[in-house]
Length: 75
Image 1 (cartoon, rainbow, N blue to C red):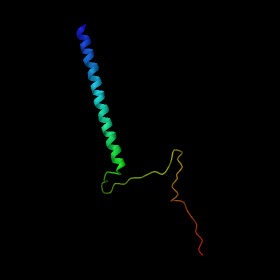
Image 2: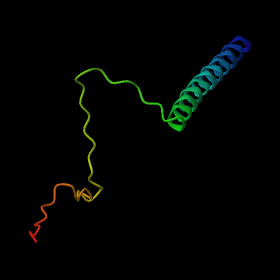
Image 3: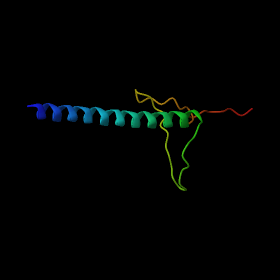
Image 4: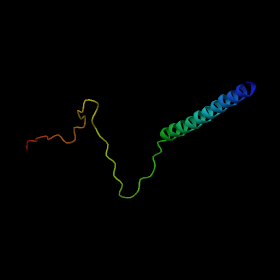
């Protein structure tokens, strides 16, 4: 019976240590991402790589007015 409690205690301790280790790893990654975003760092893109930024919000309506036709009258 004593051996079962010892094994259970070791198992619980092992689980606790691994979760703390994972949590620290996640925090380090988040801090790295935060500091990179504060410096305005962007990863260099490969030649020919294209990225599209969508101008639509949650309702699907676009705020981008660059494609709107405007009729000008000559003077």
